[in-house]
Length: 118
Image (cartoon, rainbow, N blue to C red; front, top):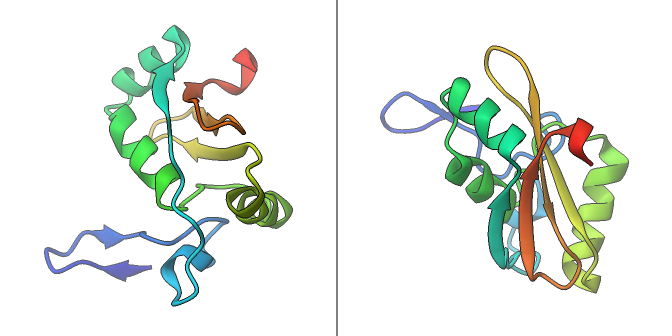
């Protein structure tokens, strides 16, 4: 992980446990359109309790940082950007819990939710 000018970790372009995403390369993938951002009450409550902004997770998701997902899911997400399928991210939160972020295939909506709410 690299550090930004102010000394904070810079995780831009990370997607699957620390590997670099294609979005950061010269052959960048298409930009992910999020559509209408929404959140379930459970995900919103957990994010607020953990001090995590929903906008920070949506920003990571949109730029191709899909959090902690298996390599096969990262490959599926890259294909989804090209072919218009659903894109999914998984973000462990400080202090515990996980929030998923899912953009629908038609790009009409992106939802923050708990895995138990899927």
